[in-house]
Structure formats: C-alpha cells, structure tokens
Length: 226
Image 1 (cartoon, rainbow, N blue to C red):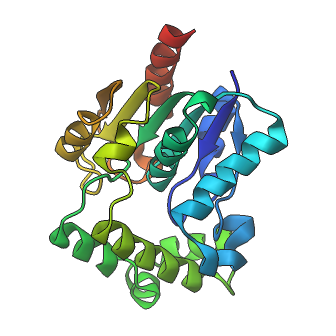
Image 2 (image 1 turned 30 degrees about the vertical axis):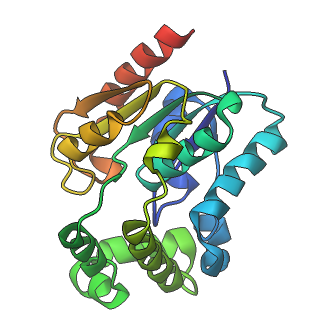
C-alpha cells in the first residue's frame, strides 16, 4: 500500500527522512515550507489538503496510508474526511487537536523570529537551512497566523470527524506538552475508528521520538489492516 509521510509546521520533507529510511513512502513539502517556502503567504489547511491531493495525482494512487506529524496529522485527517475512499488509514503523531487561550498564548510566544535567534539560535539556524534566509521569518509568521485561525475556528468539527471512516492511530509522546495526551484521547473519542497510544519518553519535537519504538507501533497497526 502506498504511504505518504507528512511533516509538521515549520518543518519540511527532510523532517521525515529518519522514518522514510525505515518504512519507505513518499514525502512532500507543504505549501509555504521547505522548497516551497516562498509561498508562505498562501499557507492554509485548504492548501495543505490540496498538496496531498496533488501527491495522489502525481503518483497515480487510488488509495494510500497517511502518516502525519503534528500539523501534518491534522491535514491528513482533513484529507481523509474529504476523500474517505482514498485513505486506508491515518496515523497522527503529536497532533494538537484542542486549543485553549493559555495553550495558544504559549505557542505564539515561541513563534517570534527575534526571540528564536536570541534564545534558541540552533533552531533558528535549522529554519534558515530548511526554508532559506529570505523566507524563514515569513514562514514563522504565517504559522503563527494559522494557529490563531485554527484556535478560533477548529476545522476538525464533530461533523467533519464523522466523515473520517478509516482506522486512525493517534500517537502522542507521554511528555508532549503541546499535543497533550489527555486532549489526544478526548479527540480520538470523536472518531468512528480510532485508537491512542503513548510514546514513552517522547516530547513534542519529532527528534525526541524513538524511531525504533515508532516503527514497532506502525507495523502492528498496519498489520491488522493487511
């Protein structure tokens, strides 16, 4: 079964390299990220769903499994709701589904390019490398705007969730202070066919996830679908 690997906000297809080396599959850069960073002003979940649609068309897929980290998981579920026949399964990792004012404020405080340069220069340099010196600040600003919009008007409503008919595996780190395990469990209860598992010792950054443990969980989930 074809597999599409979807990166998170501020990431790029390179973020999926460790996992792709173990499971194969296809990666893409979402609109406004990586090789498409110059398009950051077009960034939206409608655009991200369109990116997934384009990947299906370019690869001539009739159906595929989707794996999405953080924002990529949110986009994967929106795609599954729009095109249920095209998705055999969705795996999300560290996807934030529920927002509070406190949670939004905490995330927005971290999305300040000048503060990034001052407090986490290595991360800022990684954004330079991923998106280019001319675009990384715009990417950060566009993600901040997208978070505000999503917090104000969630897209994965009860009605949208009811259209996600494929099996969904919601993974979250037991130390993830962004996605939050309890919020992940609450959201999964809205889906017709969902299960939740905690990644031991993992926080929100994808780099904190033990790929061997992740691979074990993915193989077990996909084996039941075969």
